Amino acid sequence: MSEIRRIEAGYKRVVLLVVAHADDVALFIGGTVAAWADAGWRVVVVRVTDDRWDSYGMTEAATIDANAAEFRRAADVLGVAEIVEFGLPTDTLADASEVALRERIIREVRSHRPYALVTFDPDAIHGEDNQDHHMVAAATDEAFWTSQFDLHHPEQRAQGLEPHGCFERWYFGRHVVDPTHVIDISATLDRKVDAACEHVTMLTNFAHQLTLQAATGGWDLPLAADVVASRDVRPMIEPLLRAGAAATGAAHGVAAGEEFRIVTFGGLSAVLERFGVRRS
Figure 1 (cartoon, rainbow, N blue to C red):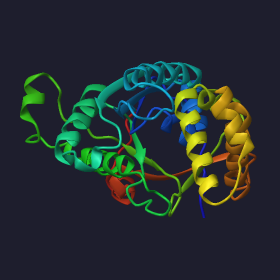
Figure 2: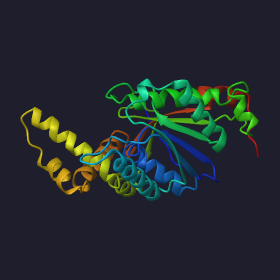
Figure 3: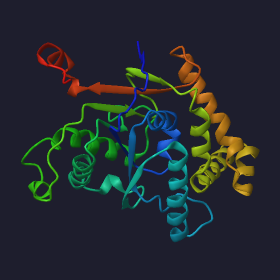
């Protein structure tokens, strides 16, 4: 049974969120990100790809610029403090080096020294067909423990980036297989929706994809066609996000929710509770 988790006051602690694409933040966990920001956490978001091909009817250069600008606006809506751009080509991470990507994530962990490291759940295989998500999940998951090793990337230590251990890992996904916690996002759902709707370029392309699939099956989808024609994504995206948050919330007894699998102290909380001494 998942537990309802309240976002505690951050006291300037850091959350480091690693995602593949610009719209991942708002669509997957926008309500929780806004709740962190409201509670005084410093939220830093790493976007691994540049989303260069995620558009409809635009050039590659214009797509890169539009998605970056929309990402910044969405981040502002949610209260994100800092964005880090890796700029790798989108939809190609399956051919990238996981070890090389892991090194860059380790650098961010050691630079920002987060309390919590947040990314896609590497075990959330059901319904996940995006290989960029898989790669980011795997590299970030491994960076959690390799960022603590003295001998991993001594060149970073020479630059003043000392090993760091994150206290918690938060995993999300299209379908979290074994969620441990749910966040009540009733108070921040409006901002999740507003942030998502900033991603006009990517969500117009999503609407176009839906029209293609529908046509193949012998259907028309007027709502998606209207989005493509008008580039007004709200009439389609807002009801989808609100319905999804309500369904997740209903499963856990809250009005609107986002699910996570949270691992505290590397899964060894019993050791901490038995032998640890809390600092004053």
